[in-house]
Every structure is written in C-alpha cells, then in structure tokens.
Length: 407
Ligand SMILES: Cc1cc2nc3c(=O)[nH]c(=O)nc-3n(C[C@H](O)[C@H](O)[C@H](O)COP(=O)(O)OP(=O)(O)OC[C@H]3O[C@@H](n4cnc5c(N)ncnc54)[C@H](O)[C@@H]3O)c2cc1C
Image 1 (cartoon, rainbow, N blue to C red):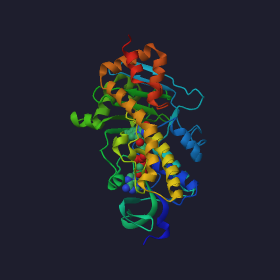
Image 2: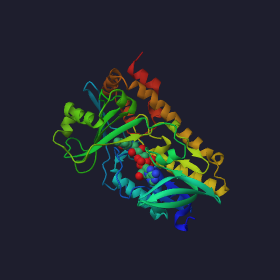
Image 3: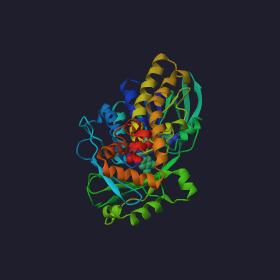
Image 4: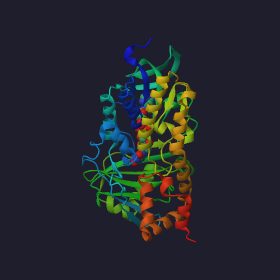
C-alpha cells in the first residue's frame, strides 16, 4: 500500500523546466502534486543555456518575471553568424514591443529557480528518486515503482506527467517513445573570453553541418561553448564531437579571437536532443508527456527550454481539466496532443526544410553574403536563430529561396 506522502493527484516525473512548470501550474490551481527527479537540486543539465523570448512569458507567469532581468544574466544583443568560408555577418535583433530577445542563464541556476518556485507553490518534491515504471492501477490510482537512495519506493497518482527529457527512460517504459533522439550536442564552459560580452556567435563548420558551433556569452567573461549536430552525421562520419569542437576552436581565426586566451574550466560533456514531435505519443491512459520527452526541441536551433516550459504549462492545464471531469483516459487527454500539434508541428516542418538547405556549404555561404548585403534579411535570420519568433513566421522556405536565388 502507498502511504499518503507518496500519493497525489498528479505525479510528475522529471523536474527540469517542463516538469517544474507543470508542477507549479497544477499546484497553484490546487492539485496535490508530487515532483520526482532522480537528481538532487541544484543540478546541472548539459545545455547551451540560451533562454529565448518564448520562455520568458512562462517564467513571468511562474512569478520569475523580476528574477530574470535582475541584471545578473547576459542579454545577448548582437548575433554573429560565420559561414564555412570564413565570411561573417552580424545583426542586432530587437523585439518590437521593447521586451527582451532572451538571456543566457546557466542551467544549474535556472532549473534550481523553477524547481524552488514549484516547491513554494505547494508541490511535494521527491529528489534523488528515479521513477522506474508503472506497476498497475487500483481505485483510480496508477501505481508506480521508484528507487530512492537505492531503496524501493511505491508511488501512486491519478494522473502522470512524463517530463523526463531527451533520455526519456520513463516515457519509454510506458511504450510511448517511437524513435531514438536524432540530434546530439556537447558543451563546456570557458573563462576569460575576449570580445563583445553581448555577442552570441554561431559558426557553421563544414564537418558537422547542418549543425553548428556556438559561443553563448555569460556573465564575468564566461561563455558556454558547444557544438551540435545530427546523430546520423556523427555515425556516418565517425565524428568525435569533443575533438571536433576543439579542432574547430584551434582552426577558425574568428573564434580564436574570442577563445585564444580563454581557459576551458569544465569537461566537454555531450547529451542527446529529441527534435521530432512525431517521435513520441504525447498521451495515453492516465499519462501526458511534456517537454523534450515529447520531441519538442527545435530541429533548426536546438532550442528546448521554451517549448519545455510552454508544454509543461499546457500539460498542467489539460491534467487539471481531466481530473475535474474525472476522466483521464487517452480519449479525454487527446486535446493536449492536438494542442501540441497545432503549436509546434508547422514550425518543425519549416525548420526541417530550412535545415535541409543548410546542409550545403554553398547555401550557408550565400546566406551570410546576403546577410552582409541586406540588413532586413540578416534580422530575420537573427530572429530565427535566437528563437525570438517561430521560424515559420520569419523564414518561409520560399522567402529564403528568393533571397538566395533572386530572379
Ligand atoms: C548541448 C546542448 C545544448 C542545448 N542548448 C540549448 C539552448 O541553448 N537553449 C535551449 O532552449 N535548449 C537547449 N538545449 C535543449 C534543452 O537543454 C532541453 O530541451 C531542455 O532541458 C528540455 O527540458 P525538459 O524539462 O523537457 O527536460 P530536462 O531538462 O532534460 O529535464 C528532465 C529531468 O528528468 C529527470 N529524469 C529523467 N529520468 C527520470 C526518471 N526515470 N525518474 C526521475 N527523474 C528523471 C532528469 O534528472 C532531469 O532533471 C540544449 C541541449 C543540449 C544537449
């Protein structure tokens, strides 16, 4: 039998941005929420730390609106894009309403803040608790097996939100993952980084295209430096990601200007990314899947924090509705799946088409040349790169083709 401490209306598995947001919004509406994470907070997550303007309104609704712009985080204002031929262009995207285009926030700091915000909304945290899988159902409660500090733990909930990220072991145990992750990226932190502290750099390296190398500035001369690409490309060309990143830093004169005198202060660590919305079944009886476990990362930029927060909020809303009507069947939860589809499927489709263009060096060289010549085009590219606007609203495949190959 499960004791009251380990039973809830909603059990959320994973306390990253998706899980913590879902937990916060559900608890604030009065639900009894358990939030389990195999890690203990504060914990790090391998990431580029870029928090786009898509994420900011959700953080605001979570009561963190004043915490983010408190001057402690860098708000990159200039974007540099470097083509494989070494040519580069810069642009300065700005939101029309004067709001921020985004920040870089170390994940150790961001995730601790959203986790604590959930706890202060009344969520019961279960840190150091790995949820293994569902074991059955009784009296309207799903029973689950977990391990806490090596000991078996029984959990029970009327509804489950799976927010276990790219690894998705728990979501897989429910039979909801259809594919393996399709992207992978690695990153490390550097100190004493030179150059404009507000400048975010993207370098297209021919060895990993359509992936890229990034330098995301953080406070006190620190930067998050990484490289991301497609697992298929890594396998096909037997790429060692960490070695490819170091080789690129040593070989590209522009990035050397920034990192030549910098020190790498952490190991280069890698992690997969799920960027296919069709890779997961987002609902089943008693279960909603949110965040990266639902494949919501942008296939173009790798942005996943904004979609994680947004989908966490959506999952909480749909969970509350289902609990209210007393029906948590897959059918009753289907509107959540439709909402994910409406919000992200079109954007992902456009991103894939653009990504196919970006496989070719000649195309990226041309994009950068057009950016140099046409500031309006450069701005659109800037918006798409930092995720300030949905990619299908700023860069249509036809529009890109027209700019690249003018009639
Ligand atoms: C190198 C790299 C760079 C990236 N750069 C960016 C960027 O700059 N901007 C951006 O927006 N996105 C970026 N992303 C993507 C972003 O990191 C993720 O999309 C985001 O973290 C997804 O949030 P989430 O809450 O869905 O999952 P996560 O943040 O991964 O959280 C999942 C949580 O679930 C827990 N967990 C997993 N399994 C279990 C289990 N069985 N039981 C209990 N707990 C469990 C984990 O401990 C973890 O805390 C990057 C990714 C990588 C790999």
